[in-house]
Structures are given as structure tokens and as C-alpha cells.
Image (cartoon, rainbow, N blue to C red; front, top):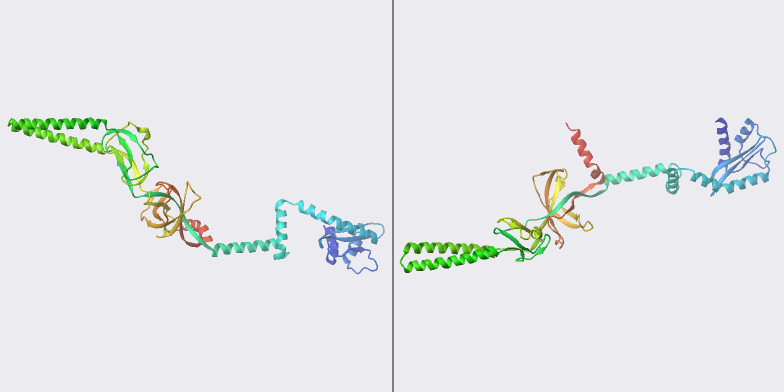
Length: 388
């Protein structure tokens, strides 16, 4: 190692002066060669010479030649070795650059790019420090819109449940789930054949009892007349009931809307009982957004706060909403306690929107620093964990 260190001093002596140093020195030599003299005497060398290796006018290395015995290096030999150093400099540089692993090559390239701006000493450390400082400053002082994310479902308050008005059988189904209907459109019809027979029977009974009452009155049989009149009134009441059922044998839409429940096409001929819900009809012009906001974020939600939603079925489209109400009581669900937040659309609803559609909503909660947004969950956790 001592010899290596002395040889390094010899090479540095040539590199620092940026000149070829030949020992023994020619008469016209003016270079400092103290380390060359010491190294030659210590190793009993008759002659030696050191040549700087230059690449793009920059010294990248040095070559030292030694002769234990023999004549000193003449000018022709010195010129030849100098030419060899010039011609091999590029090849040696490429070999050195390509022999390192990928990370070292990438770091060297980055250092070279930044050297002109930051200087040649500790370039990577300086660049890393500046980038880290800029990043910390951005995280602490730069403020961005903080948005609360929550799942949503489209709901509507204008919903009609259309039941069966009497016991019967399904005859025709004219709509399916998702169909849009207008007010008064026929949605379903019940079989009326039995009702028509009951109507004929009630009419016949009414006529018969009226005639019996007239006959009893003509014969001056007052008690029989009263009985016949009562039976006639009973037949008329039965006829009104039958005709009422016939009138309501067709289920009609009470208003314009969309069918959200009632897949009855496969139930033709099936029996239904009075009061069974056949269809659920919802209005499209009074829809609103219902959010399930986690209790950890509910204190950030403010009334009239703006936000945007994106449907699962059409995530490329975004729609504006505004908060109108926050329910004061949480609802316990599998994911945890959730608060129901109601939002209204700030634009007209699209034709393809349907109650029950879901997606993701993001509500603006003001501007916060990036560092606060990233660390707020962790800070809250440690506040609860370390609290006593």
C-alpha cells in the first residue's frame, strides 16, 4: 500500500501540472518532479515517465511507465505514448462507464446533467437536498381542495305503490322494470271473465227482486214486498262492487315516471290477492342524491357545500351537486357508523338516470395543506391511542 500511495502522488504530480513528466528530466524541462525523483530512487528505476490521459480537454486519468534498466525516454517514445493515451481515452472511458451497475450509471448521468447548475462537488447530495426542501415546502404550505369521498345512491320521494284492487288473475302485462310511462298509461290488466259473470248474475237478481216487490205490492203483501225490496237493494250493492272491480281491472299509471319494481311478464295467469303490490313507480323529476358519509369525516361537511358525482355505469361523466341536509343521527352499518347526507342536483337530470343508481361522490370541504391531508388519519389514530 505504501508503494501504491507513492505511485498515486507521482501521477497527481503530472495531473496537477497538466504536463508529461519525464525522469531523468531533459535540459529544457521546467516541471516540478519531486515525487518522481523520490519514487525512482526508492524503487531503483533508471527511467520513468507519466502521461495525463485527456478526454474532451479534461484529465480523466494518468499513465506511468517505468524502466528498471535501459536508457531514458526519448522524445519519439514520449510522443508515441502520448498519442496512444489520446487514442485510448475514449475507449477506456466507455469501458469504465459500461462496467458499472444500472444504479451507478443512472446516478452518474444525473450528476452530469446537474453539474452545470449545481457545481461539480457533491452534486447529487445538493440536488437531493434541494428537491427534499422543495417537497417539504410544498407539502406544508401548498393548499389544495380537500374533498370527502363517499358512496351515493339516487333516491326519490315521489314513489307510488300500485296494488291489486281485488283477488284475481293476471291477464296482460304491458310494462317492464325500467320502462318510462305517462300518466294514465295501462300497465297491467286483470282477468275479468268471472267479474262479468258476477255482473250478469247481479243484474238478473236485481230485476227478479224488483218484480217480486211489485207483485207483492199489487197483492197487498207488505211484508213480502219489504223483503223483496231489501234483496233488490242487496243485488244493486253487489252490482256496484262488481262494476267497481271491473273499472279497476286495469292498473294505470297515476303520474309520469319510471317503473322501478314489478317484473311480472313471467307471471301471466298467476293469481294475485287484493292489496298485493304489483308495481312501484317513481318520478324522475324529483330525484336527489343520498350519501353515506363516514362518521370520521362528517364534521367536515357543511350545508350548501358543492361537490361532484360519478356513476359506476358512466364514470367518465361528472355531475355537480350541493349539500342540502345532514341527518343528525348516524346509521349503524357493516362498514361502521354512517351519516346520511342529502344533496340536490344543480342541473337538470339526464334521461338515463334511474332511482337506485349508485357511484362515488366527492364533497368539497375547503382548502387544506397536502401534509395535513396525508397525515390526518395517522395523527387521529395516535391521538386516540396515546390518550389516557
